[in-house]
Image 1: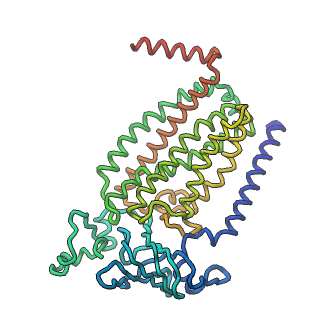
Image 2: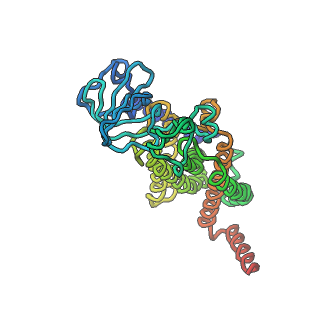
Image 3: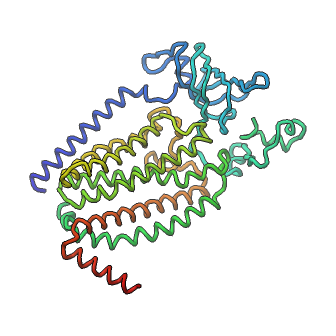
Length: 177
Length: 257
Protein backbone atom coordinates (compact mmCIF):
# COMPACT_ATOMS: atom_id res chain seq x y z
CA UNK A 1 0.00 0.00 0.00
CA UNK A 2 1.56 3.29 -0.96
CA UNK A 3 2.10 5.95 1.72
CA UNK A 4 -0.61 8.31 0.47
CA UNK A 5 -3.30 5.66 0.51
CA UNK A 6 -2.06 4.47 3.88
CA UNK A 7 -2.36 7.97 5.25
CA UNK A 8 -5.89 8.35 3.87
CA UNK A 9 -6.89 4.96 5.30
CA UNK A 10 -5.52 5.89 8.73
CA UNK A 11 -7.23 9.27 8.61
CA UNK A 12 -10.60 7.84 7.54
CA UNK A 13 -10.54 5.09 10.15
CA UNK A 14 -9.41 7.63 12.76
CA UNK A 15 -12.34 9.92 11.99
CA UNK A 16 -14.71 6.95 12.00
CA UNK A 17 -13.40 5.71 15.35
CA UNK A 18 -13.69 9.21 16.81
CA UNK A 19 -17.28 9.60 15.71
CA UNK A 20 -18.13 6.09 16.94
CA UNK A 21 -16.68 6.98 20.35
CA UNK A 22 -18.56 10.30 20.47
CA UNK A 23 -21.85 8.64 19.48
CA UNK A 24 -21.26 5.92 22.06
CA UNK A 25 -20.70 8.49 24.82
CA UNK A 26 -23.76 10.52 23.81
CA UNK A 27 -25.96 7.42 23.78
CA UNK A 28 -24.52 6.31 27.11
CA UNK A 29 -25.27 9.71 28.62
CA UNK A 30 -28.79 9.63 27.21
CA UNK A 31 -29.32 5.97 27.90
CA UNK A 32 -32.08 6.51 30.45
CA UNK A 33 -33.87 9.10 28.35
CA UNK A 34 -34.04 6.98 25.24
CA UNK A 35 -36.21 4.37 26.97
CA UNK A 36 -39.74 4.62 25.67
CA UNK A 37 -41.32 3.76 29.00
CA UNK A 38 -40.78 3.15 32.70
CA UNK A 39 -41.25 -0.35 34.03
CA UNK A 40 -43.52 -0.75 37.11
CA UNK A 41 -40.45 -1.58 39.22
CA UNK A 42 -38.77 1.65 38.11
CA UNK A 43 -41.83 3.69 39.14
CA UNK A 44 -42.09 2.08 42.58
CA UNK A 45 -38.41 1.66 43.45
CA UNK A 46 -36.82 4.40 41.34
CA UNK A 47 -34.93 4.40 38.08
CA UNK A 48 -31.22 4.06 37.42
CA UNK A 49 -28.35 3.94 39.89
CA UNK A 50 -29.69 7.01 41.73
CA UNK A 51 -33.09 5.38 42.24
CA UNK A 52 -34.85 8.49 41.05
CA UNK A 53 -38.60 8.33 41.56
CA UNK A 54 -41.05 9.93 39.12
CA UNK A 55 -43.15 12.66 40.69
CA UNK A 56 -46.89 12.56 41.07
CA UNK A 57 -48.38 14.63 38.27
CA UNK A 58 -45.59 13.76 35.85
CA UNK A 59 -46.57 12.66 32.35
CA UNK A 60 -44.94 9.36 31.54
CA UNK A 61 -45.28 6.00 29.86
CA UNK A 62 -45.33 2.71 31.72
CA UNK A 63 -44.79 -0.67 30.07
CA UNK A 64 -45.36 -4.11 31.50
CA UNK A 65 -47.50 -7.21 31.46
CA UNK A 66 -51.20 -7.05 32.33
CA UNK A 67 -51.62 -9.00 35.59
CA UNK A 68 -54.11 -11.84 34.95
CA UNK A 69 -57.35 -11.30 36.82
CA UNK A 70 -56.71 -7.62 37.48
CA UNK A 71 -58.80 -6.19 34.63
CA UNK A 72 -61.91 -4.54 36.04
CA UNK A 73 -64.53 -2.58 34.15
CA UNK A 74 -66.67 0.09 35.72
CA UNK A 75 -70.29 0.22 34.71
CA UNK A 76 -71.15 -0.35 31.10
CA UNK A 77 -68.87 2.34 29.71
CA UNK A 78 -65.35 2.17 28.33
CA UNK A 79 -63.69 2.74 31.72
CA UNK A 80 -61.24 0.01 32.55
CA UNK A 81 -58.56 -0.47 35.19
CA UNK A 82 -55.83 -3.07 35.29
CA UNK A 83 -52.50 -3.76 36.95
CA UNK A 84 -49.12 -3.91 35.25
CA UNK A 85 -46.14 -5.94 36.43
CA UNK A 86 -42.64 -6.59 35.11
CA UNK A 87 -40.32 -8.65 37.32
CA UNK A 88 -42.42 -8.08 40.45
CA UNK A 89 -43.36 -7.55 43.15
CA UNK A 90 -44.09 -3.92 42.18
CA UNK A 91 -47.42 -3.40 40.46
CA UNK A 92 -48.86 -0.26 38.89
CA UNK A 93 -52.57 0.34 38.42
CA UNK A 94 -53.59 1.88 35.12
CA UNK A 95 -56.95 3.58 34.68
CA UNK A 96 -58.10 4.13 31.15
CA UNK A 97 -61.20 5.21 29.33
CA UNK A 98 -61.26 4.37 25.67
CA UNK A 99 -60.91 1.59 23.14
CA UNK A 100 -58.21 -0.95 23.88
CA UNK A 101 -56.05 -2.29 21.01
CA UNK A 102 -56.75 -5.69 19.45
CA UNK A 103 -53.85 -7.41 21.15
CA UNK A 104 -54.87 -6.30 24.66
CA UNK A 105 -55.52 -9.21 26.98
CA UNK A 106 -54.39 -10.54 30.34
CA UNK A 107 -50.72 -11.48 30.31
CA UNK A 108 -50.06 -9.29 27.26
CA UNK A 109 -47.31 -6.67 27.21
CA UNK A 110 -48.71 -3.16 26.90
CA UNK A 111 -47.44 0.43 27.04
CA UNK A 112 -49.69 3.08 28.62
CA UNK A 113 -49.11 6.82 28.34
CA UNK A 114 -50.63 9.13 30.90
CA UNK A 115 -50.25 11.05 34.13
CA UNK A 116 -49.07 9.66 37.43
CA UNK A 117 -51.95 10.45 39.83
CA UNK A 118 -50.55 8.56 42.83
CA UNK A 119 -47.15 6.87 43.39
CA UNK A 120 -48.51 3.65 41.89
CA UNK A 121 -51.51 4.81 39.87
CA UNK A 122 -51.67 6.17 36.33
CA UNK A 123 -54.51 7.86 34.51
CA UNK A 124 -53.77 6.76 30.94
CA UNK A 125 -54.68 8.71 27.83
CA UNK A 126 -53.39 6.07 25.42
CA UNK A 127 -52.86 2.31 25.71
CA UNK A 128 -50.68 0.55 23.14
CA UNK A 129 -50.23 -3.21 22.87
CA UNK A 130 -46.72 -4.53 22.66
CA UNK A 131 -46.15 -7.61 20.55
CA UNK A 132 -43.40 -10.12 21.32
CA UNK A 133 -41.05 -11.61 18.74
CA UNK A 134 -42.72 -15.03 18.62
CA UNK A 135 -44.68 -16.15 15.59
CA UNK A 136 -46.46 -19.49 15.41
CA UNK A 137 -49.55 -21.02 13.84
CA UNK A 138 -52.68 -21.39 16.03
CA UNK A 139 -52.35 -25.17 16.40
CA UNK A 140 -48.82 -24.88 17.77
CA UNK A 141 -49.81 -22.05 20.10
CA UNK A 142 -52.63 -24.17 21.45
CA UNK A 143 -50.28 -27.07 22.10
CA UNK A 144 -47.54 -24.91 23.65
CA UNK A 145 -49.47 -22.20 25.43
CA UNK A 146 -53.08 -23.35 25.55
CA UNK A 147 -54.15 -20.28 23.57
CA UNK A 148 -56.80 -20.83 20.96
CA UNK A 149 -57.10 -18.51 18.00
CA UNK A 150 -60.63 -17.70 16.93
CA UNK A 151 -60.90 -16.04 13.52
CA UNK A 152 -63.10 -12.91 13.49
CA UNK A 153 -65.78 -14.67 11.43
CA UNK A 154 -66.35 -17.09 14.30
CA UNK A 155 -66.40 -14.58 17.16
CA UNK A 156 -69.30 -15.03 19.50
CA UNK A 157 -70.99 -12.57 21.75
CA UNK A 158 -70.28 -12.82 25.44
CA UNK A 159 -73.87 -13.86 26.21
CA UNK A 160 -73.26 -17.02 24.20
CA UNK A 161 -70.16 -17.77 26.24
CA UNK A 162 -72.12 -17.91 29.45
CA UNK A 163 -74.86 -20.13 28.11
CA UNK A 164 -72.57 -22.77 26.60
CA UNK A 165 -70.29 -25.38 28.15
CA UNK A 166 -66.73 -26.76 27.90
CA UNK A 167 -66.06 -26.13 24.23
CA UNK A 168 -66.40 -22.43 24.98
CA UNK A 169 -64.16 -22.84 27.98
CA UNK A 170 -61.21 -23.63 25.74
CA UNK A 171 -61.66 -20.39 23.84
CA UNK A 172 -60.46 -18.51 26.90
CA UNK A 173 -57.63 -17.15 24.81
CA UNK A 174 -56.95 -14.21 22.69
CA UNK A 175 -60.26 -12.82 21.57
CA UNK A 176 -62.11 -13.61 24.73
CA UNK A 177 -61.86 -10.60 26.98
CA UNK B 1 -6.04 -5.10 -1.89
CA UNK B 2 -4.89 -2.63 -4.50
CA UNK B 3 -3.92 -5.35 -6.94
CA UNK B 4 -7.40 -6.83 -6.54
CA UNK B 5 -9.28 -3.57 -6.78
CA UNK B 6 -7.15 -1.88 -9.38
CA UNK B 7 -8.65 -3.38 -12.59
CA UNK B 8 -12.13 -2.19 -11.56
CA UNK B 9 -11.02 1.41 -11.43
CA UNK B 10 -11.60 1.22 -15.18
CA UNK B 11 -15.28 1.66 -16.02
CA UNK B 12 -15.00 -0.86 -18.81
CA UNK B 13 -13.83 -3.66 -16.50
CA UNK B 14 -16.53 -2.89 -13.91
CA UNK B 15 -19.15 -2.86 -16.63
CA UNK B 16 -18.02 -6.27 -17.93
CA UNK B 17 -17.99 -7.74 -14.40
CA UNK B 18 -21.47 -6.35 -13.75
CA UNK B 19 -22.82 -7.81 -16.96
CA UNK B 20 -21.50 -11.21 -15.87
CA UNK B 21 -22.96 -10.90 -12.35
CA UNK B 22 -26.36 -9.46 -13.27
CA UNK B 23 -28.18 -12.70 -14.28
CA UNK B 24 -26.91 -14.43 -11.12
CA UNK B 25 -28.84 -11.92 -9.03
CA UNK B 26 -31.75 -11.05 -11.29
CA UNK B 27 -33.02 -14.53 -12.20
CA UNK B 28 -32.89 -16.07 -8.67
CA UNK B 29 -34.28 -12.79 -7.34
CA UNK B 30 -37.33 -12.93 -9.59
CA UNK B 31 -37.91 -16.66 -9.05
CA UNK B 32 -37.56 -16.43 -5.26
CA UNK B 33 -39.88 -13.41 -5.12
CA UNK B 34 -42.54 -15.37 -6.98
CA UNK B 35 -42.13 -18.41 -4.70
CA UNK B 36 -41.75 -16.41 -1.49
CA UNK B 37 -44.68 -14.06 -2.01
CA UNK B 38 -47.13 -16.82 -2.98
CA UNK B 39 -45.88 -19.13 -0.22
CA UNK B 40 -45.92 -16.42 2.42
CA UNK B 41 -49.18 -14.71 1.51
CA UNK B 42 -51.27 -17.72 0.51
CA UNK B 43 -49.88 -20.91 2.08
CA UNK B 44 -48.14 -20.03 5.36
CA UNK B 45 -50.44 -20.57 8.36
CA UNK B 46 -51.93 -17.55 10.18
CA UNK B 47 -50.38 -16.41 13.47
CA UNK B 48 -51.96 -17.43 16.79
CA UNK B 49 -52.26 -13.85 18.00
CA UNK B 50 -52.24 -11.58 14.99
CA UNK B 51 -54.18 -13.77 12.60
CA UNK B 52 -53.56 -12.81 8.99
CA UNK B 53 -52.08 -9.40 9.76
CA UNK B 54 -48.69 -10.88 10.57
CA UNK B 55 -48.14 -11.61 6.86
CA UNK B 56 -46.69 -8.14 6.50
CA UNK B 57 -43.55 -9.71 8.01
CA UNK B 58 -42.80 -11.24 4.59
CA UNK B 59 -42.22 -7.75 3.19
CA UNK B 60 -41.28 -5.78 6.30
CA UNK B 61 -38.43 -7.95 7.61
CA UNK B 62 -36.60 -8.49 4.28
CA UNK B 63 -36.86 -4.78 3.46
CA UNK B 64 -35.58 -3.79 6.91
CA UNK B 65 -32.71 -6.30 6.84
CA UNK B 66 -31.49 -5.17 3.43
CA UNK B 67 -32.00 -1.49 4.13
CA UNK B 68 -29.22 -2.00 6.68
CA UNK B 69 -27.26 -4.54 4.62
CA UNK B 70 -27.02 -2.31 1.56
CA UNK B 71 -26.12 0.64 3.75
CA UNK B 72 -23.06 -1.29 4.92
CA UNK B 73 -22.16 -2.13 1.31
CA UNK B 74 -22.59 1.54 0.39
CA UNK B 75 -20.28 2.52 3.26
CA UNK B 76 -17.67 0.00 2.07
CA UNK B 77 -17.88 1.49 -1.43
CA UNK B 78 -17.49 4.91 0.19
CA UNK B 79 -14.37 3.76 2.07
CA UNK B 80 -12.84 2.41 -1.15
CA UNK B 81 -13.72 5.65 -2.93
CA UNK B 82 -12.04 7.72 -0.22
CA UNK B 83 -8.91 5.66 0.40
CA UNK B 84 -8.13 4.31 -3.06
CA UNK B 85 -9.78 7.20 -4.90
CA UNK B 86 -11.56 4.92 -7.31
CA UNK B 87 -14.23 6.71 -9.27
CA UNK B 88 -16.33 3.63 -9.99
CA UNK B 89 -16.69 3.15 -6.22
CA UNK B 90 -18.19 6.66 -5.97
CA UNK B 91 -20.62 5.70 -8.70
CA UNK B 92 -21.46 2.54 -6.74
CA UNK B 93 -22.37 4.73 -3.74
CA UNK B 94 -24.72 6.69 -5.98
CA UNK B 95 -26.16 3.48 -7.44
CA UNK B 96 -26.90 1.96 -4.01
CA UNK B 97 -28.40 5.01 -2.24
CA UNK B 98 -31.85 5.26 -3.92
CA UNK B 99 -32.41 1.49 -3.76
CA UNK B 100 -31.54 1.49 -0.06
CA UNK B 101 -33.75 4.51 0.55
CA UNK B 102 -36.71 2.71 -1.04
CA UNK B 103 -36.07 -0.40 1.09
CA UNK B 104 -35.95 1.78 4.21
CA UNK B 105 -39.17 3.51 3.22
CA UNK B 106 -40.87 0.14 2.61
CA UNK B 107 -39.83 -1.06 6.06
CA UNK B 108 -41.14 2.13 7.72
CA UNK B 109 -44.38 2.14 5.75
CA UNK B 110 -45.24 -1.55 6.23
CA UNK B 111 -44.34 -1.19 9.91
CA UNK B 112 -46.78 1.70 10.25
CA UNK B 113 -49.52 -0.23 8.46
CA UNK B 114 -48.97 -3.16 10.82
CA UNK B 115 -48.60 -0.99 13.91
CA UNK B 116 -51.95 0.72 13.50
CA UNK B 117 -54.08 -2.40 14.16
CA UNK B 118 -51.57 -4.29 16.36
CA UNK B 119 -50.09 -1.63 18.63
CA UNK B 120 -52.89 0.89 18.31
CA UNK B 121 -50.66 3.54 16.76
CA UNK B 122 -48.88 3.87 13.44
CA UNK B 123 -45.90 5.73 14.82
CA UNK B 124 -44.18 6.10 18.15
CA UNK B 125 -40.85 7.76 18.86
CA UNK B 126 -39.13 4.72 20.25
CA UNK B 127 -35.45 3.96 19.64
CA UNK B 128 -36.00 1.42 16.83
CA UNK B 129 -38.42 3.49 14.77
CA UNK B 130 -36.44 6.69 15.24
CA UNK B 131 -33.08 5.16 14.30
CA UNK B 132 -34.64 3.60 11.19
CA UNK B 133 -36.03 7.01 10.25
CA UNK B 134 -32.52 8.42 10.64
CA UNK B 135 -31.32 5.72 8.23
CA UNK B 136 -33.80 7.00 5.64
CA UNK B 137 -32.47 10.54 6.14
CA UNK B 138 -28.89 9.26 5.78
CA UNK B 139 -29.73 7.68 2.42
CA UNK B 140 -31.47 10.87 1.29
CA UNK B 141 -28.52 12.91 2.57
CA UNK B 142 -26.05 10.83 0.57
CA UNK B 143 -28.16 11.32 -2.56
CA UNK B 144 -28.49 15.06 -1.95
CA UNK B 145 -24.80 15.60 -1.17
CA UNK B 146 -23.80 13.83 -4.35
CA UNK B 147 -25.60 16.35 -6.52
CA UNK B 148 -24.99 19.37 -4.27
CA UNK B 149 -21.57 20.14 -5.77
CA UNK B 150 -20.69 21.58 -9.15
CA UNK B 151 -17.81 19.16 -9.37
CA UNK B 152 -18.89 15.52 -9.48
CA UNK B 153 -15.74 14.28 -7.77
CA UNK B 154 -16.24 16.68 -4.86
CA UNK B 155 -19.85 15.52 -4.56
CA UNK B 156 -18.78 11.90 -4.66
CA UNK B 157 -16.24 12.50 -1.93
CA UNK B 158 -18.72 14.29 0.34
CA UNK B 159 -21.35 11.59 -0.21
CA UNK B 160 -18.78 8.88 0.55
CA UNK B 161 -17.85 10.56 3.83
CA UNK B 162 -21.49 10.78 4.91
CA UNK B 163 -22.10 7.16 3.88
CA UNK B 164 -19.09 6.07 5.92
CA UNK B 165 -19.91 8.11 9.01
CA UNK B 166 -23.55 7.01 8.98
CA UNK B 167 -22.58 3.36 9.29
CA UNK B 168 -22.52 3.94 13.07
CA UNK B 169 -26.31 3.99 12.92
CA UNK B 170 -26.47 0.35 11.77
CA UNK B 171 -25.53 -1.34 15.09
CA UNK B 172 -27.71 1.23 16.88
CA UNK B 173 -30.73 0.17 14.80
CA UNK B 174 -30.13 -3.50 15.39
CA UNK B 175 -29.41 -3.31 19.12
CA UNK B 176 -31.91 -0.52 19.91
CA UNK B 177 -34.51 -3.12 20.94
CA UNK B 178 -32.05 -4.69 23.37
CA UNK B 179 -30.41 -1.58 24.79
CA UNK B 180 -33.59 0.34 25.53
CA UNK B 181 -37.26 -0.22 26.27
CA UNK B 182 -39.01 0.03 22.94
CA UNK B 183 -42.51 -0.60 21.65
CA UNK B 184 -41.00 -2.51 18.73
CA UNK B 185 -40.50 -6.19 19.51
CA UNK B 186 -37.05 -7.73 19.65
CA UNK B 187 -35.55 -9.49 16.66
CA UNK B 188 -37.06 -12.79 15.57
CA UNK B 189 -34.62 -13.95 12.94
CA UNK B 190 -31.46 -11.78 12.83
CA UNK B 191 -30.69 -12.85 16.40
CA UNK B 192 -29.53 -16.12 14.85
CA UNK B 193 -26.46 -14.22 13.64
CA UNK B 194 -26.02 -11.52 16.28
CA UNK B 195 -27.03 -13.38 19.44
CA UNK B 196 -26.63 -17.05 18.46
CA UNK B 197 -30.23 -17.75 19.45
CA UNK B 198 -32.59 -19.91 17.45
CA UNK B 199 -35.31 -17.99 15.56
CA UNK B 200 -38.57 -17.61 17.51
CA UNK B 201 -40.82 -18.37 14.58
CA UNK B 202 -42.45 -21.64 13.54
CA UNK B 203 -40.66 -23.44 10.65
CA UNK B 204 -43.65 -23.22 8.29
CA UNK B 205 -43.47 -19.42 8.61
CA UNK B 206 -39.66 -19.23 8.78
CA UNK B 207 -38.99 -20.85 5.40
CA UNK B 208 -41.12 -18.49 3.27
CA UNK B 209 -39.53 -15.62 5.22
CA UNK B 210 -36.02 -16.88 4.43
CA UNK B 211 -37.00 -17.24 0.75
CA UNK B 212 -38.26 -13.66 0.77
CA UNK B 213 -35.09 -12.39 2.43
CA UNK B 214 -32.96 -13.87 -0.36
CA UNK B 215 -35.48 -12.71 -2.97
CA UNK B 216 -35.17 -9.10 -1.77
CA UNK B 217 -31.39 -9.36 -1.81
CA UNK B 218 -31.35 -10.68 -5.37
CA UNK B 219 -33.79 -8.10 -6.69
CA UNK B 220 -32.17 -5.14 -4.93
CA UNK B 221 -28.67 -6.22 -5.99
CA UNK B 222 -29.86 -6.62 -9.59
CA UNK B 223 -31.37 -3.13 -9.53
CA UNK B 224 -28.15 -1.69 -8.13
CA UNK B 225 -26.06 -3.43 -10.80
CA UNK B 226 -28.33 -2.09 -13.54
CA UNK B 227 -28.16 1.42 -12.08
CA UNK B 228 -24.37 1.27 -11.84
CA UNK B 229 -24.04 0.05 -15.43
CA UNK B 230 -26.30 2.81 -16.72
CA UNK B 231 -24.23 5.34 -14.84
CA UNK B 232 -20.94 3.92 -16.15
CA UNK B 233 -22.24 4.05 -19.72
CA UNK B 234 -23.66 7.54 -19.31
CA UNK B 235 -20.40 8.96 -17.97
CA UNK B 236 -18.29 7.55 -20.76
CA UNK B 237 -20.79 7.63 -23.57
CA UNK B 238 -18.27 8.98 -26.08
CA UNK B 239 -15.54 6.48 -25.28
CA UNK B 240 -15.00 3.67 -27.79
CA UNK B 241 -15.95 0.83 -25.40
CA UNK B 242 -19.27 2.44 -24.56
CA UNK B 243 -19.99 3.18 -28.20
CA UNK B 244 -19.27 -0.44 -29.05
CA UNK B 245 -21.71 -1.71 -26.41
CA UNK B 246 -24.38 0.77 -27.39
CA UNK B 247 -24.06 -0.07 -31.07
CA UNK B 248 -24.22 -3.83 -30.58
CA UNK B 249 -27.18 -3.28 -28.28
CA UNK B 250 -28.92 -1.33 -31.04
CA UNK B 251 -28.20 -4.03 -33.54
CA UNK B 252 -29.62 -6.72 -31.29
CA UNK B 253 -32.73 -4.67 -30.76
CA UNK B 254 -33.23 -4.02 -34.48
CA UNK B 255 -32.66 -7.71 -35.19
CA UNK B 256 -35.31 -8.63 -32.71
CA UNK B 257 -37.74 -6.25 -34.36
